[in-house]
Length: 178
Image (cartoon, rainbow, N blue to C red; front, top):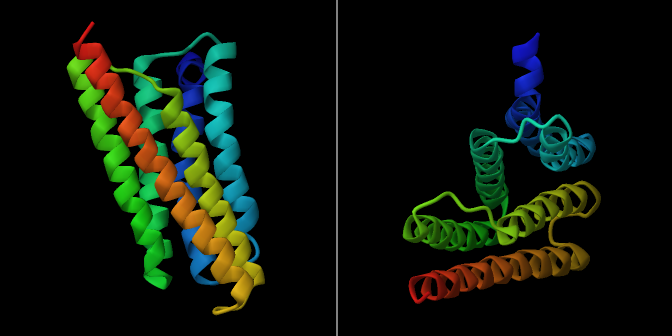
């Protein structure tokens, strides 16, 4: 029982993986139920850290599990969305740039660093999943509103991810020159 208590935040983080599988299944079947599932995925992302802090069970391992689950879910979601619309694959480039520069920042400082940029990016990527779920459910393929909303969401989030990558590079430069 104590093991479950100490692992509760990690269990919440890991729950995103089967929830994502359900979201992917529902997304392919264009079910309206993919919307509450993506909302549940977003909720687990917010609540896992809150639970860890309230129960005083925060750990580096938990932070790594949280970030890894976020990355797996978001990357897999953009690949799945990219199967229907190649523009979603652009987001993978932004994620790659952000993750690579964040990793370089961690390596240059010789420690695992947590960035508010990362949490912001994760939230933005989950908003893309939610937006895609809503527009794929309620708008027909080729509808002008769908094309506009998707384009703004995709290109805006890709720009955000690339800006974060640049900020990470500036942070590395600043750290090296201290």
